[in-house]
Amino acid sequence: MQLTKFKIKKFRAYEEEFVISFDNLTTFFGKNDVGKSSIMEALYLFFNYNPKKGLVKFEKDDLNIECQKRGDEETILSACFSDLPDQVTIDEAHSTSLSEEYLLNSSGQYNI
Image 1 (cartoon, rainbow, N blue to C red):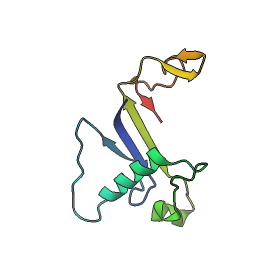
Image 2: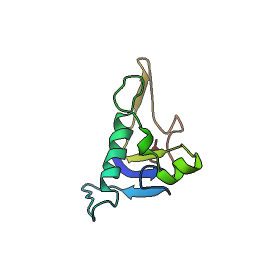
Image 3: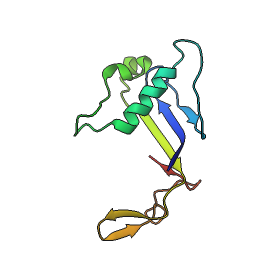
């Protein structure tokens, strides 16, 4: 699977939805304090978040400041993947596809 898009909303400096497209090589560059590290932190949280195992967790400071003031406490991190496997195994005895499980978006990508 290959990450193709990542959406950030209400996370640190990103109050409105911000979409990042990924290719084989994606770089982030810009002036200080424009959000490059926030993107990297959002990716880290997305791929490592598991409150039951205590790996990483969101902290209050991760929520956008303007959203905090309004009491809107829902941060949204979303990823889209392409180059998906033809078959996935749900349990030991059942093999299926992401398409058969209605898990693909209209572009045929897996969106979490």
